[in-house]
Image 1 (spheres, protein in one colour):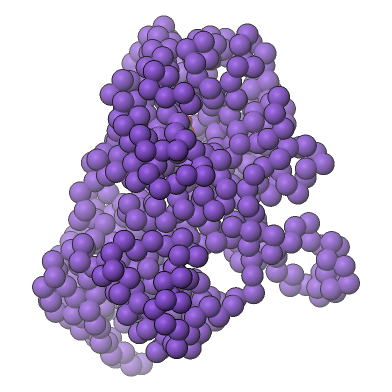
Image 2 (cartoon, helix red, strand yellow; image 1 turned 30 degrees about the horizontal axis):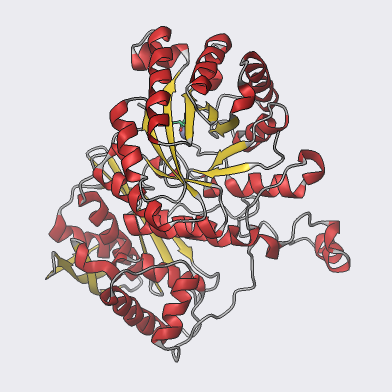
Length: 512
Ligand code: KIV
Ligand code: ZN
């Protein structure tokens, strides 16, 4: 058995299934590049058969990422698998990940199939996938709630058909660490050819135990692949968090005895990128990547850390990519320095026009804000007005008046398909007035289900980053906007959410 633990990142597939976390192709590419810098072993880039958009994302990522294996999810049918294989054609190293549910509940109520039918479909799907590609993962969806002897039969059959990785998900986050670890151990003992495949864990966090369950799957169950997401992003309570898994295995190597290939200094940049792109804010006390994860507030702790770091610190902040906020660019920086910083941050703007638009925004920001940090640059390029020509709505200008005792009033100018329009409105506060001014023209009928403001780099001089989540006709989207003026940031976020709401997505849900 190898002593390497394979890190399989599914931020772009399972993470993206989180309502409101959907990303554009360019955003996914940027995150994929960061995952490559992080030295993730496998990147699950999407679910190619679910929509043309997802197919194009998987294809684009497969074409540019060379150091990580690129994987596409597919249901256990020939059409999905062929689509995944097609999207992965350009990959230096590709993997087809096919799945079918094996628990009595899912087979009977969701699939309406008998166990024998599921067994046969799993076997044939893996056979078909192996004819397309040498690297095939099979997942037994809701595996942990499956009947163990049936699951063992399925695993044995798909390994005989050539599956190289077997993944046993705790799809609904029901497991308890010791029980999950034992389940996997017993399962592997029941599968005669278990040594012919790498065993993998995939845990959801509904009871807050995804990381603990995954680690038990490794320690007790003998798994050598963990499926996880940056910041634990994912549906409901999310997936197992990559940063926690990696730092647990590294910090407690004495206990786990396993190596991970991750470049941990890229963890915090990856966390920030995913948070800024999706608008899912990281809680301050989140392990490893939360703003307070290395902050010692009490006098006793501070005193101890000053005398000897290891009195209260088990990891070093710099090892996971925390750095003192450094000024990276200023108003005198030229276009080349800006371009180079974008490259270092993994941002690829495809056309000269996009680079020019981003640089113009950078100059405009540098005029208003003396210190520009990496976070500002990332916020600036995730602001969709950089690529405004592709979007339906674009921000132009805003003026608003508010005074104690008076009703705030806002006037906004924005573009609709390139044409300038104006809107104005009163509101409860300046933000409310500005968003109502947009709605006075757009009349989207969308319901706002989340509004949050975050300071990008910590002080009142920082840019405000606003996340707006809108819901309409069953679709939930997030818009993110950044600006030193939080009312403007709010308007940008609102327009960005409207752009996503109006883009047609025809996705098929992976969970059936
Ligand atoms: O949670 C789950 O079961 C999954 C599978 C599709 C791998 O995400
Ligand atoms: Zn999942």
